[in-house]
Image (tube, rainbow, N blue to C red):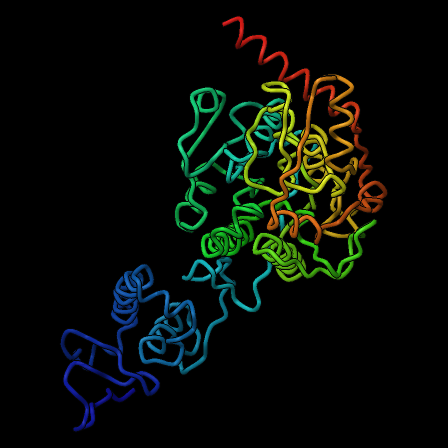
Length: 442
């Protein structure tokens, strides 16, 4: 073979390889260009150079395909062709697909596909609860720790926990608006289940719409992306607030018109639809329950419209009087927290093939403030209730369901509640009564 002679227009130190330039520190001797060993060593040296490029920030552009037809990409193709013994003349060698979401935390390629992790009967999930210091987070953590072990359930929030919560099990700082922080927690703790409870509730959200929009919507997007990227089973609670005045109210089925008029309700409809979209588009194992008003003995009211049904027990024991901010005839669906936590675990453990939908109504009872007061009077005859209606909360309550149709949950995964109104009132008064007697003794 006749040695190649560079053309007069060729710059020193460069030689044509299939029409592309290959950099060199100095021109090679003509005889060396025929030496196979020299060519292999030269190609190997270039590979080391380009490995550095692959692990540099510039690799992100290559991963996105931005540089696919730039000179650098063409050089990479040529080196790959030399090393693999295949033609390097613009022929792109196929490579196995990379499984990543993209350089942006919220950038998912059109052809992405995710598959949720499956759990056998002996596998123990590694659980993260966001917004863990709210009304439901602490109770859920205690409930799940009894089932899966203390160290398998991590509670998180942006607030400092009380001592008894901090010492009851793992607790970490987690800001759902910080994608990197959330992702590190999931990776470092090998999380497999995520319960996303961070949200501003109805009345509080109306007082600070911009914050509610950030926490309830932007935070949700971060959680969805992390869950999809790391194959998590994701639970996001929804609410009776996801319905509006044009929805059927008595009963309200799983599938119907939803036009809420609060930022809390709008964000929950958004969460339902985004979760279902990620399930059908990316295979995310998304599960959601629309909670009624939740009544809990061991947590303080958190600014919701149904919180009167918790505060009434505090005040009945403490002073024998209660001022209600809703009309006496305002009927809303309700549930005791033990039923709520059990329903949450049951839907998370339900086989995927048993779920005919990804968002379910769940219900236990439905009552008015007047109904609740009458039941309290059976235990505290001197109890008195008065009404000072809050127009904002009343308007919210009037747009919500009066009763939930949860027949699909009962049919698909065997949901069944334990607490009706009489059992609820007895349980709550016993809890607060015992706490009061202990406080008086101390």
